[in-house]
Length: 309
Image (cartoon, rainbow, N blue to C red):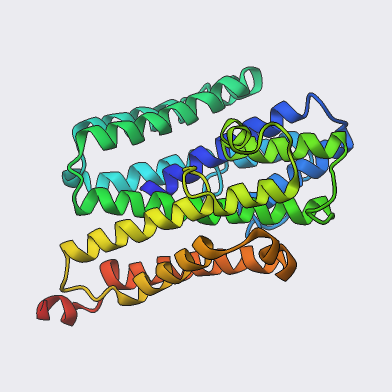
C-alpha cells in the first residue's frame, strides 16, 4: 500500500515538473525529456512504449496494470489497504478510497486534457494528506513502521533511478558548469524531488551538478535524499524486529546497515571518481535485496517457522 502510494505521488510530481519545463524549451529537448521520464518511472518492462508526448502522458497517467501508471498505483494501493482494513484507521481508508474514486471518475481523462496540472496537484496533495492522516490516526506500532518501511524503500530506489537517468542523459562530468538549458534541467531535477528550496538553503541558488548529487545522495536532513530514506528504512526495520523478535531479520538489517555506512561516510568526490552510475545502480540493487529479504522474513515465510515461533 505504502509503496504504491509513494510511487503514484512521485510520478505525479515528475510529470508536473516536466510539463512546466515544456514552457521553457524546444520540442526537441521536450521529446528527450519525456523519454527520460519513462526511464525514471521504470516503464522499461512495457513493450513498444509510445514516442509522442500525448501518448506518453496517457501511459503514465491511465494505463491499467501492475503499477505502471498513477491510476494503477492508486488502485493497487487501495486493494492492498482493503486487505489490511482492520489494521488501519477509518480515516486512512476513507482518504485512500476517496482518492481512488476521484482518479477513476469517467470524466477524468477529459479533465486531464483540459487541466492536467490541477489533476496532478490533486494526486500529490491527497497522497500527502494520506501520510498526515496516517501519522495522526494510527498507532505508531508495527503496522505504522511497515508503512514507513515501504514508503522509504520506494523513495530511495526512485531517487537513485532519477539521479542515474538524469546524470547519464546530461552526458557531462559533474565538475562542468551547466549552460542555461542545462541549468533549467538541474533545477528540474531538484524540483522533481521537492528539493529546490531545501537545496538553496544549504548551497544558495547556485546550482552545480556536484552539489545536486551530494544533496540528493548524502544529505541527512532532507526527507527525499537517499541517505535520509535509508536511515528511515533502518530505523523502521529495527523497530519491527524489536516488536517481532521471533523473526530473524539479520539479513535485512545488515543490508540496510551497510548502505547506511556507505552513505554516512561517503564523499561525493570519491563517489564521482569511482563512477556515479555504478554507485547508484548498487543502491537500486540493494533496495531490491532489502525488499526481497523483508518479503521472505515477514510475508512469504515457511509455515513451519511460524509454528515454531
